[in-house]
Length: 388
Image (cartoon, rainbow, N blue to C red; front, side, top):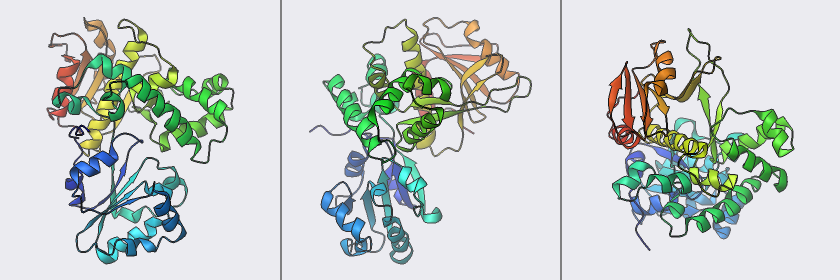
C-alpha cells in the first residue's frame, strides 16, 4: 500500500490546544490522516465497528472503562461520533474530570445539529478535512488540472489507476445510500433525480421551484434535500456579498458540490471539452473548493462569498475584505474580463481585484491583477495575501 500524501491539516497542532471535532465527507481521508499523524498508541473508538457501536449506543457510560489506560494529557479518537450522539455527554465529562483531549470525527453533522446533541459548549473546536488540494497534490508532483477537473480530489479517486470505477462506486454506495441512511430521505427515485438536477445546476443560484419541477417534488422537499447535502458535507452554499451601496446586490445563495469529480458523476458527464461551458464551470468550482479549503486550513474567519448586482454584474468570489476574484477559463484574458471587477472596485470594499485564468501572462491593468491560475494558487497557499 502506498503512503498517503502529506496533508495540510495538522492534527497534532490542533490537539495541543484543545479537543476538536473533525468533519469531512466520507473518503476525504480522515482515517488515513489519523494513522499518519497521531501516535499508534492513541486509542481509537471506531463506531463503524458493529460490536463497538452496539455496546456504546446501549450504554455510553462504558466509554471511560474502554479508555481506562488513558491518563493525563492522553488523546482519544472517536470515529464517526454522529452515530452515537449520546457519547458527547460522556466526552464532556471526561474532558472536565480527566482532562483528556478528544478528536471526534464525523462524515455528517445532521444528527448532531438537529438532534439536540451536546456540542461541548466551547470545549471542542471544529476543523474540516476536504478533498486533496492543488497545494497537496502539486507538492507531491501529482497535480494535473484537466484530470483534477474531471475526477476531483477524493484520495481514492485522484490517486487511482481506475478513477471512473472508483468514483462511480463512491457515488453509488455513499452519496445515495449514506444520505438515505440519515433517515430523512426514504424514497430513492426523487432524490436521485434531485442529485442529477442539482449537479447540472452546480455553481448556479439556488432556485427551489425550478429544481423541484425537474426532480418532480415540491420546493419544500428540495429545501430539505439541500439541507441534507449540506449536513452530510456533500455540498455547500456560497452566500452573496450584499454590502455594496452603489449597485444593489441580489441575496440568493449558490449551491456547490464539494468535489468536481462527484459533481460530474452525479451529472453523468461523459467528457469535458476544453472549450465548453462545462469546462469553465468546473474550473470555477475548482477555484471555489481551493479557496474554501484554504480559509478552513488557515483557521481564517474571512467569509467566502460571491457578488451579483441586480443588473447582472457579477464577481465570482469575494474573500473577506481582501480579494475580489473573477475566474475565466480563457487563455487570452482581456480587459473585458475585468469589467465587473472594476464595477465592484468602485465600492472600495476590498484591497485587490484579480482575474484568474489560463492566460500565462501576468500583468496589472487599471487596478486589476491578471494572474495565471497556478501562480494565483501558489501565492494563495504561500500566504502572499493577508486575508481579512
